[in-house]
Structure formats: C-alpha cells, structure tokens
Image (cartoon, rainbow, N blue to C red; front, top):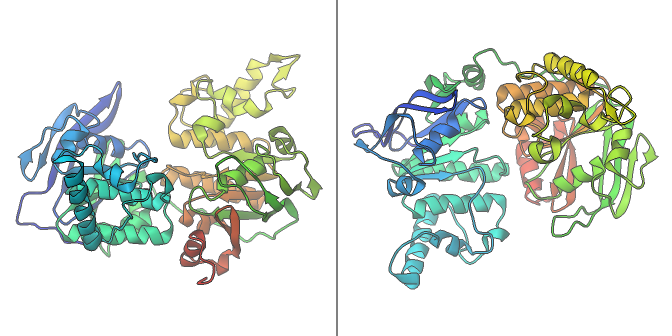
Length: 509
C-alpha cells in the first residue's frame, strides 16, 4: 500500500458538499480529502450518498453547495470532460465500451491529436508504459466484446490512465471478478499509489476494503460519520457497525441433517441463441441444504436459473422435483411444484415497478381463491395480506398502495423474498440475491435462507460473491463455459481452489 506524501497540498479536497434531490438530501455537508499515494475506502449502506458524491466529483451532477480543490487549486467541474481534464477518472460498475471496436480503438475514442497514425503510436507507447508500471496488460488488437469481464474492467482503467487520470474512482470494482483477478487489480492499485496517484475505492466487501485501503471514510444518511485509519486497530465488524449505526452479527449456520433430493438436474443441455448454453449439467439440491453456484458472469448461471424456474426448456436431460420428472417444464408448473424464485433482475423480471406494492406481493398467486373470485380481485384481502407481510419483514415503504418503483434496492429485494417465502417453497432459487445490497440488507436475506434450510427446504444460491457462498453453502458447484467443473463440500472448498475452477483450471485444484 502506498504511503501518502504529506509535504504538499492534498491531491483532492472536497469541502461542505451538499446535494439535494427534491426533499431528499443525498449529501449533507461532506468533507473528503485524498492525498497523493493514498487509497481511500468509501463505505456506506445503500442510499448513504457514496455514488452521488463521486458523481459530483466526476461532473455528472452539480453540487448545491460546497467546493472542490485539486492540488490546492479550486476546481470547477461541470462535466466528465472537465473532470478528465483535471486528472479525475472514474470506472463505473457498468462499463462504457464499444464491443465491436478493438481495445486500441476504444482507447482512441475522444482523443485529439496529430491524426490517426501519430495518435495510434502514442497510445501504444502509453499502453506499454502502463503495462510495465502497473502490470495492466491487454492485446490492443482484440475486440472489446471478446474480452472477459475482468479484462473489460482493465480496459476501463487503462482508458482512464491514457487520459491522464491521477485520481481514480472505482465503484464496486470486484463485483464480477474471480479472486485471482481481484488480486491482480489490488496489485495494480498499490503500484498506482506508489507512483503518487490517489484512489477512491467504493465497495460493500469489507474484507477487500481492509486489504487495499490506507484510510476509510464512512457515510451514513448523507453525512460523514467516521474516518478511520485502516490499521491493526480496525476490524470488519467495526466498519460494519459504523456503516449501520448498530451492532451487526453474522447469521448463525447450525448443523442440519440433509434429507431427500428435492430438485435434480440430470445431464441438462440447452441451446439459447448466442448465449452460453448448458452442457450436460447435473446437480441435486436436498432438503435442509444450501447449494451455492459460483462462476464469473456469463458462464451459464443465468441459463441454469432459467431451467430451474421453468422459463427455459432444456433440449437434453431431465428435471426432477421430489423424484417426479417434470416434462415439459414451464414457470407455472415449477411454481406449482413448490419452486420459489428470486430472479437476478429485480426490476425487469422480478417486479412490475409501476404497480402498487400490494399487487407485487401477491402477483404470482393472484388467481388463487383468497385473492380473486370469478375474475374479480378481492382488494381488501390483497391489501391486508400485503400489510401483514410489510410489517413482518420491516419493509420501509409508505404503505401497501405505494408504487413499487419508489422503494430502495434493499427493500425491493425484501419484497421479492417476502413474496416467495409466503408460500413455503420446497426449493428456493436465488440468483445474485444480495448484489448491490449493503451489510444489513444482505444479512437479512442470509437469515431467511438459513431459516429455510433449518425447516427442511432446499436453497440454490447463484452468486458472484464468494464470501456470500462460503458463508451460506453446504456445497459449492463451480461453473465455467456452461459446464459444472466440480461440486465441492464446503469443508473441502477454498477461495483459491474455487477461483481456479471459475477460470476453467481443473488440474491445479
């Protein structure tokens, strides 16, 4: 980790930054400094104001009050072009690349200079400098669309460095990386700090914040509540408690005797257009067990979830629920057989955000007699059922009639959970169940999964967060290019072994 250089003004100084959206104050008088050679962690629950603050620094929003200085000089940042000109680069969670262009062409977008050939040579030279200095290596001739997720992120970082970034903002940078790719990223960031750059690192993964940062700034409800040096006195638990404002205890996983097979996939194959098909996938979920599925995004996890949910009909193999073959599969059939589903895409597939909250909570069962009769909805029964659930699970919403789209990410995920748990699923399928959720919302979700396991249901958790899988799973299946590489009992699994399998390496394991 780089050590800050103290004999000069801070590289960055944000003072009294305030930003309001209508009646909501997203940033409330925030101060943040970043010295050259420093990696600062920015932590906070969902809605604490982290991304808003960084969007102000990168010129996407104008602050309502406050000032920004770079190298001790006032900085007027009205657009991302202003930010880039002042040496501020940002790598967002969703990358801004042109898939049909090569790595080199993506790096040349927006460049001005002495014509294609001169620029071409200059950027290749700069790529070589970045490779030797930070270990960030890419083939300039490869199409961006052919890069892995980790390589696409590397391209975004190289793009910021080519444009002269001295301050680099990373928003949830390891969400889709293998452990080995995350380690490579951390080495590059440490090398950047050693050359006098400053890095702001936003993440929900507290072990990573502990591993890479020099100092941590914690936001709660739009205010800075603490700034701590990341040293031997700082623990993950302490950071979690500062974020949430209360004691956070990890959910307890008690031993449960494994029961009968509830869900069996036997040599399942799919073809699905250009997407990664499944190739002879076999997997079983038993009563009283949580099976985790690990893999870098795009290796067949979505197809696996679609088969289990009955949305994608396999063209080879058998699906069995509690010993009975299901053919043909459909969403309604699987639901009728007790398969609950929390889809990866909360807003698109999971919930109809324009509908009232009560309607979303009963949506899959709206035809049942207690909610409708002769095609007419029993609105009172729907409202009452929804109110009970909202109270029971502590969903923060202004009543059951509020439009669902107005809820925060954590509360939307609670709505999906509540809806599935209401019918005591035999097996619950959960895809990326805590993506983008803070410590406290993720802890709530994990508790519900462990309670299901305790009562003898099966849970299939597909996640790119290995810490989550190791916390919950009894067994971990690792996917690569549509196949299951291996299924490891949790006591035989290690982060390194799973990471290698995620990259398609079986021998070294």
